[in-house]
Length: 115
Image (cartoon, rainbow, N blue to C red; front, side):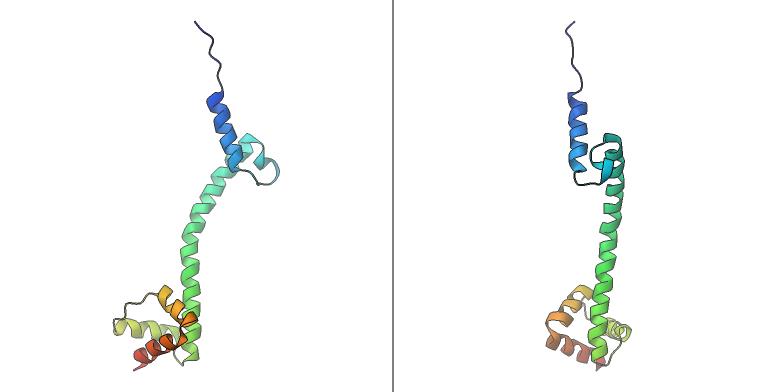
């Protein structure tokens, strides 16, 4: 029976893990066991932060809309309530963009809601 040399797959796996942890601090970048553990945590945090990012942007949009509406004499909650009652189908992302970059257009929307 011919001799079989092993280890190519394991070496490849090890090399890939260490390649992914490049730039990590201390032994987490060059010790396989610590690197594997670091990758598991990094993946978990990355998933959680992708979820959190949506929440952070929504908060930012609310702040931008609230600042613009309060300058025009209307609270954020009254503004959103007025939009719903008038069945205006603009989401917070679009409203925040208008408030920031197109203040005249946003002012027209606010006046429409006030009336």
